[in-house]
Amino acid sequence: MTGTNNHSKNRYRPAYEVVATKIVDLIATSGLKADDRLPTEHELGEQLGVSRTVVREAVKVLSATGVVYTRKGSGLYVAQKTSLQAATVLDTSLPIDPTLGNDIYEFRLLIEVPAARFAAERITPRELHAVRDAVMLNLEGAKSEQRELFYKGDAAFHQAIAEASRNPFLASAVATITRLQDWVFKLASGRTQKTLLKNAGQHEAIFAAIQEGQPERAAQAMREHLEWALISYQQEVRLRLVESEKSE
Image (cartoon, rainbow, N blue to C red):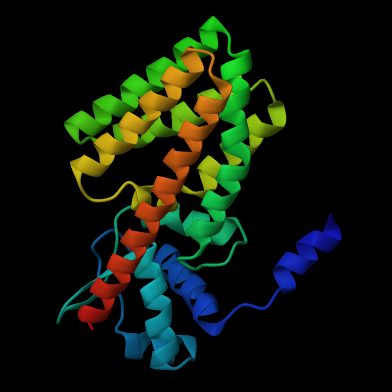
């Protein structure tokens, strides 16, 4: 275990990644709040002892992951709920990079597809009720465009299915990845109600397959849902990177 931790701490990290971490730390230690203005790229470079180019690359990553945002002709600002995203970046010891979402969804496909299959085979009436309640909560959030309600229902849905797999390791893995992937999921959920409703509809399809005791159909529905979420995430990251470049 010690060797693994040391390897994580000693792994090579690109300069922009190190600087991105330092900017997040600066936000946290300076007591900056949402919509507060950050120093300019030049000022950050001088403060952190790096070139403006490195700072710019770090800012692109932080913009893509929702930690900061830019206003054309005005500067760099702290985004909403940065403290939660900062904790994600700093506490997980994972690389700060938009492609991190690809790895997260790859992992989710490995654990949640079989979890859905097992749930269809093993779910109890009480567990089925929990999945149904999560589906309804998620759908309510989508229809009313209450995103926090939508996110709450989504997390409860995936966790309830993992619990219904009756495999404690799968349930634990889903709980962990849910805590780590908050900012990834929020990017994947997109900017429009249409995206929220499609997401909720896919949840309903997964639930229906589980309720009807169709393991392979449940697994396939979960796979299609996660693959679609990954595509949505990638599209949103690209869009944010383009917006960041245009604002420079």
